[in-house]
Image (cartoon, rainbow, N blue to C red):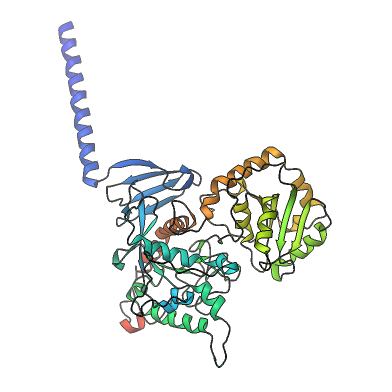
Length: 479
């Protein structure tokens, strides 16, 4: 009986072992049939706060999961990989005539070339306040540079020439510069250069097969100055806009779901080798700029009358004229906190001047939208105050004076950690403002692609082709 029991035990064990092996083998075949292999990469997005789970060698169905937000991003199978296996956004850029881009800077070339040769000379962007809205200039330079740059390390986007393989289509129109330099009528003109360029742009885009393919949803148009693209925005609204805020856009034309908020380029100088501390910055609260503004900016003048006589507060009128930028740099470098108050629009470059100065921003702007806020927690380095609270007697000063040295030091250190996310430079560097904007665009691509695919469910096959592709559809609310 004992021999029979032992035999039965061995038989059961062999049976269990065989079934386990068969199960594991069948599971392996199932995984292999799907073509999926998983590996993990840390550091896909800034701060190494993102865990990437990628499927397949070609990254098809790749998921980027943020540990801070829990949200995922799905990359398509055409994504390029760089040295660290990070997918690079594939960007098709139109070869628009120079009058839309570098021609606005006075670049003429040889009369045949559309683009300047960046290996010989880079056309300069005009200084002063023009620089704060120069976003399209830096993005265009980066795409042109990607054509001859051999090292892809740290790069988030690359120009390609086959639009059918592209993730997005970039429109190289320097809209902010066009507004700043071409919106005023010259002698004998009935229409401004800016208005004419916008009309030409609309006609060009809606005639392109790339636009027709997605109704413009995968197109990137930069209109960072609040008044840029005024004539064309209502016709090009399906595109993804790169904006400074949504202050002058109705929500059905621009909104946080489809568009990207980009930082201003700061105009004050960066605080290099900052060894200051809480005690070495004598000014408690700093503001210098235009005080009398319209719309939501009226809060500035009310705060001015409340704070102007406080001994440890600097609140004064200032411009970029007569050394104003240098004066503002010195003031911010000497201040613990810097006010960023809504003006004619919810945002201003003052926030990014404060970040570059390691002066803890105090944001009083209820409608402000902030760059990269889906992956950055601004509460780590900014103080937010509701406008209604800021206008209460002594509320703002009591709040700021009760922030202790330890908390301020933590925020100051965090400013030094993240300041490079807001630096525009050429050549662009890893995780600087240019690369961060490309990454923000990448995170919008799946939603734009989803909208395009949904719109194709019931394609208007019954309509004549000319009528189906005639123009951009009327805008509708998103969500």
